[in-house]
Image (cartoon, rainbow, N blue to C red; front, side, top):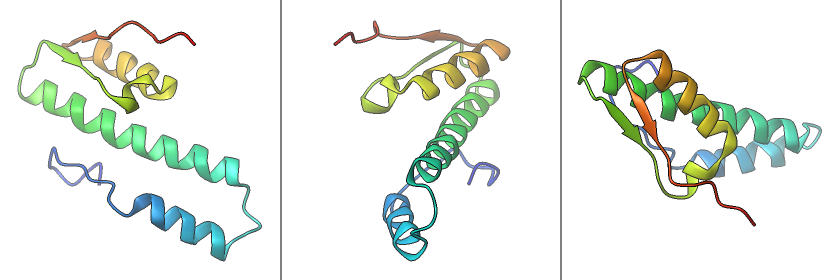
Length: 96
């Protein structure tokens, strides 16, 4: 999905696939599968957005919504945006 050349991403069915995988492979550590799932999603989201920003000459990136509070996503987004021509805009981190 990351290297298909498009800016599109859809994770439709991905969570269900992970569920079925875990049911068929109960010996796998759930935490490891979840961490791998998170890494894969973050890689695709950040990779495609940063590539689009570079190719379309975007100066600033912003993210909002539920996924934007994920620490792994924020860290990857910030590192990759700084490496390119873009700045990042974030809403303040929620404290609870």
